[in-house]
Image (cartoon, rainbow, N blue to C red; front, top):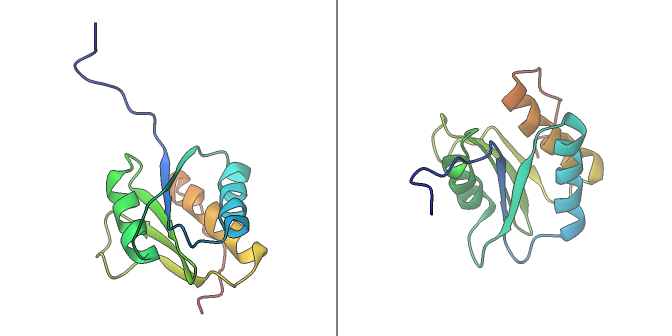
Length: 120
């Protein structure tokens, strides 16, 4: 018998475009993993990093979302304006920055101080 109200596990949503670099995506995941916050990774057929991050934040019951495409990694928070994400870094910033962005997504959930990011 199906349940009328499915309980959703609290997850950060991480949506990425097909052109996103999988190594960069993995570094973001490692940042969240290090902070101990679970996430859901989902490829979308189209969309910019900003649009994907916004959609991810709106769909996450933790209100935190990440979007990635070939150019950008974006960390968004549901309480911000759509065009004003919390962090926007170049997808070419390197593994340390990508991992820090993932850690910051988790730290936002845990209400801990955020790591400094190069905001190119």
